[in-house]
Image 1 (cartoon, rainbow, N blue to C red):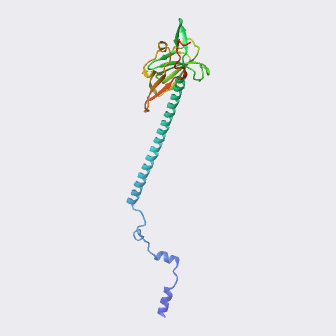
Image 2 (image 1 turned 90 degrees about the vertical axis):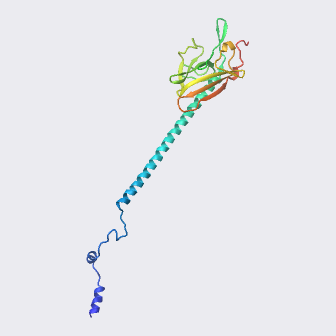
Image 3 (image 1 turned 180 degrees about the vertical axis):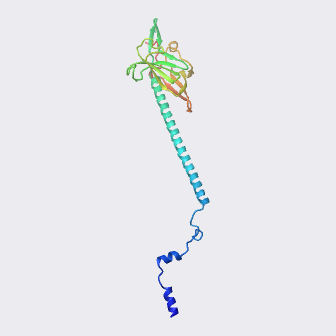
Length: 231
């Protein structure tokens, strides 16, 4: 009877209340170290901080590269526009003649640092009608490379005043002009004395930024061989 009673007691269901009070609580060590120590937490934060620094550095480098690439593209576009302007104007130079005291005089000024001539290139705007002949005078001022335009005929056309003054190369700090005569380059050109225009004009440009110096050679179209004493 006693063993039967013990068997019954062993198989008696245990209530929820009894199991909660009877089962001892397990510590972190007894659970196999499931918690984090302070050193582990600090190490994890340090790793996250390093990753954030690397990510921010990469983003900053990408933004800087993007800005630099955009600046290079803008500078390249500005250079192409300036080359196109100079090529069109110089390539369309016209041997315009004035009579002063019965003497034929070319309206062409070829200096080492400035250049003035008459062109047939078509470009209109305020103060200069579209088409026709225009006097253009290129020189470097405080704001960069400029061109002054005047529609012909005009009084005192070679004076550096009146007409329309445009800033065409704000990043240009220096310009040089050379003139081709029978295979030889000259620093200046007296069209009246030579009685003709040069065969070509070579333009050298130096910039205020880190762009490389630019040099272009422009042939002077169909009017190169025209002479003031031609019939």
